[in-house]
Length: 115
Length: 109
Image 1 (cartoon, helix red, strand yellow):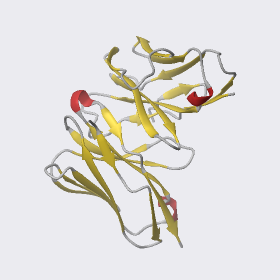
Image 2: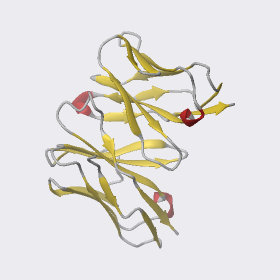
Image 3: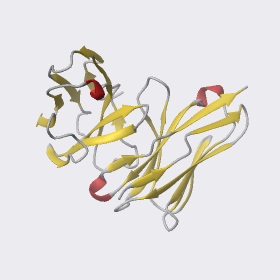
């Protein structure tokens, strides 16, 4: 089965440190989403890309978060500097043209803890 | 603004039927997704409705009324493994996918 691969699965870091999360979308998928999930907020959309171009990153705190797609096989989400309130599970999801019929596929997530 | 509402929690009995409602107000609408998420896992796709009406897929069915901004997910013959969160998500303008907060469904024997 094709899958979306996210690394690392878990990350514990100290406040102020830089965190980089990576996502390998399914081959051929041209749309990539980054979401953050907490118990309080549910799934929040941070940013998304189509054909590697950023379409919307209005959900992201711009002063500390950045998202990029250096190539079609890699999406990155970076937090610098990290803060305890950034602790959450970060999900990447990808989909191809006509993805409505089969939905977007989520990676297993990166569980981030900032202490 | 964007607003997607679902009940926070529901409880149902094994073997019974449960309906999870979702109402939405979004800028732009292309379709509506339902996802299932077990605790500690990633969301998995259940259904996508574009047109009004009911779509059935095994024990799960999803309904959409675009004019009312309303959808529901119907689960029949409930099994213990159906205990999970169910997430409603709108495919809004520019295919921006926005999720509701999810409904946590507990199944009792």
